[in-house]
Image: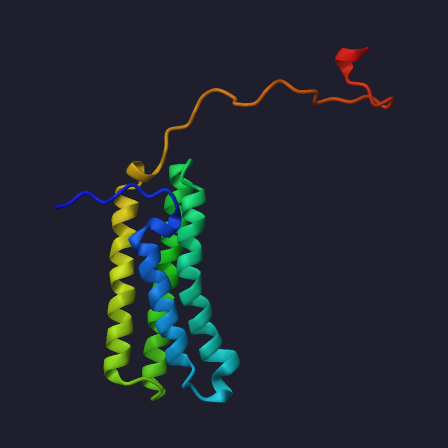
Length: 152
């Protein structure tokens, strides 16, 4: 098994790239949905599919805290499952072919497997916390005259 390159941004993560690609496919596919579904099914499936990538990006920002990182990844997984539900609903309504639904759901399921793998290996994504404060000393208290307490 080859080693993946170091990710310096959430955009470098293969799971994020796949999430964006499936979101684009879903957007293109839902353009063919009936106009009366615009504010219901079309809106729901687009929103949930877009949220997968957004949750991955948020997880990246929370990786200093492993539990927060995992929480956001599980949110992303929940959104991909919701998107699968909406794909099934679109199939049931006759807006998708069996092949379209199968293909999109397979891509979403792959994203789910990747997210679950990241959850299982969260410690390899999350940095260790520093026990020291990395800021220069500052004036935190200002009295009514505008002078810091140390200036008095």
